[in-house]
Length: 224
Image 1 (cartoon, rainbow, N blue to C red):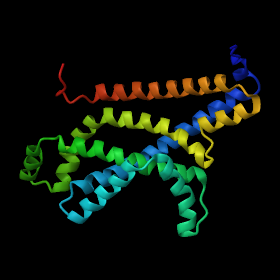
Image 2 (cartoon, helix red, strand yellow):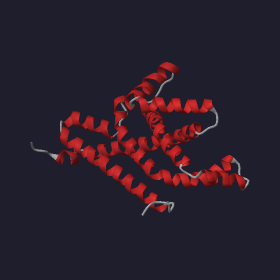
Image 3 (cartoon, rainbow, N blue to C red):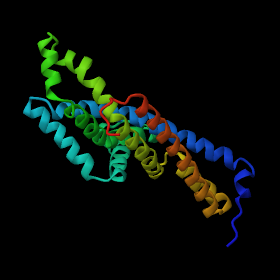
Image 4 (spheres, rainbow, N blue to C red):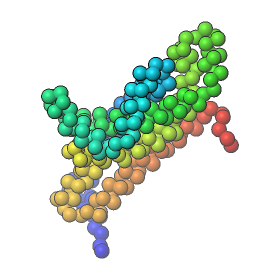
């Protein structure tokens, strides 16, 4: 079998692949911002003293952890227009779907980071006259963020890979762009390999950036 990678540099193939990669980055970043927002809300809901809030948070986690992302994307894309009689854009539905799915996992990271902080620090903050939320904001959360950097980096990498599923609801990201180009020039393996390399480079760059911030924000509690 002879592979012909010259197809990548012919015409506008490389440009279109890079445009698809740019879209992947955009959808992944915006989806992750939404995921963090949802994750914070769900994490605090889980540790809330109100049973109804805990129940709602746990129900959210149960649903989004137990159903495939593909099913969730289809439900959002086709369900919103039917349920609310509104016009939707595929890329907006994609971002919502990614954010809601990833938010369930981000919440576990945030909650785990918060509860890992010694309870005595909350008590100390309250003794200093801080309210619960002041103690959380000034003492607990800064430490929790440091501990959450590594798992959040891993979740973002997972999100960039899961973004390939947006192609199923007609969102033009890297994977869908690759399939479109294959339909034109039939260079299947060459284009899939190129797309894989682009995903590889992107996610390794994310890993390097995450490791950098993890080292910069070390708490000093790590085992040497």
